[in-house]
Image 1 (tube, each protein chain N blue to C red):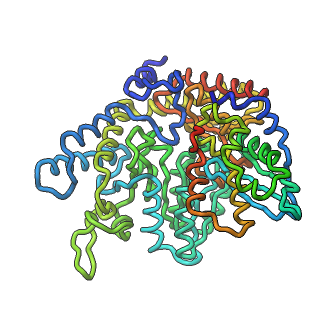
Image 2 (image 1 turned 120 degrees about the vertical axis):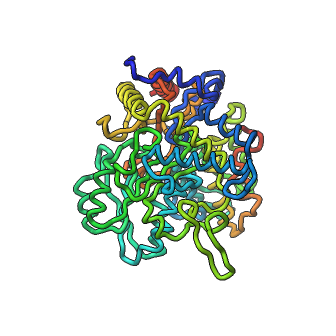
Image 3 (image 1 turned 60 degrees about the vertical axis):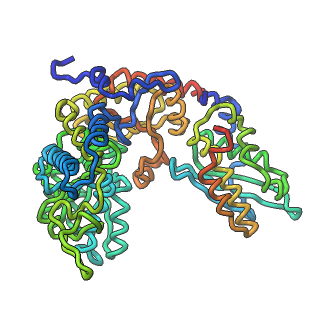
Length: 411
Length: 149
């Protein structure tokens, strides 16, 4: 082990869930692209809120409310620093999906008209397809998709060709939740800006796993969810450039998002609260702050280095299995710790059931990316996705489990 | 353990599905899918003059559990009368598959019941009856219930 290498066995001790046994076996959790497990620091922060200073935020003048508000806004500051944004550019939503919907509706409805183009890619999650389809239906805009090649990479010439059609908005995933492909978002953002498009990044699968700097990427909006980054379920984040957020209409109306309301109308609150209607999931936002602290204490470059090592090992071990098809790029620089695969003759659901008996949690299905499944020519894939608490022995167990599945299916 | 489910009989029904295909002049044609996994099944039933199942076929893609289940179900229903199809229960199918004792989890029991759901919807459509809300709820949400999981 290198001196700077993180030790998953030590990290595991921070995660109470790994004390659990599944059918009497230790839990091997390989579904981190769906959600990650939570360290006790996060669980503790949430417990602490409810136990000691539970109150609504931005409302009361009493002590508890002041403390709750401070902790809530402090979490916003942590999230902002984590991706190199300003506090006022961080909007809390309930998840990454809501963050993308916010952009699609608040920006899209006001700025798109009939015949305008929206540019996405074939590897998007439904959350970065369906909101745009809905807004396209409303406005008469058209949606184009950048195709992928055999290796699961965007086709460069097609990127240029489709950008030449001068889309008004480009929305693209930084890391695919199926293929693991890491897209060169910085370059696409630059190109999008050159043709006058707004650039949106779906960072749900990147922010938890690598250093993401919104200034460096230059994107106009970026969305991710807290629960895929050790945080609690129920909090998503939207980063948006101040000028753009300022000009946009609110997404949801209600309390907290206004400065004044008359019977004849209302005036919007300052950023970012203009986009946070109603009571937020305060404890969970504070929990996300604790998750950011935890990731910072490890360092995102070490997180990424660990996952690259695991991915390299997993690709090597999985490739030893006959009749396996592994999707996505082989170049580790262009790949996150997500590996989708199929064993011929065994449906991914049957694989997942057999692995479950070994205490191994993987995902099987279409991964909310049905257009991508169609492109790959399959109904479903099995998917293993890694995080900081996973080790090479988890991958060995996965491979062992796959051999077991082949034995059961007499292959 | 649920891997015991994948025994020879099931694997055989999966690899060599019985009554696989479609029936051009079937009175009952229905397509059902499981949005969770993308599994998809088409069921065809041809009734004779006495309202008996003269022929029944299915096609589609899916896991071993759903294909074996569809395969077995078509065998069980061939030659049955329409009212026997109506009274054919989830338990009948799950028992035939031998699922009861295996502790298969609710998600996977849904796979086993996909063809059953297609059957029920197909029959109701054929009879021109609207599925009652109660029955629909049972098909969608309690496919896993009935004490089988």
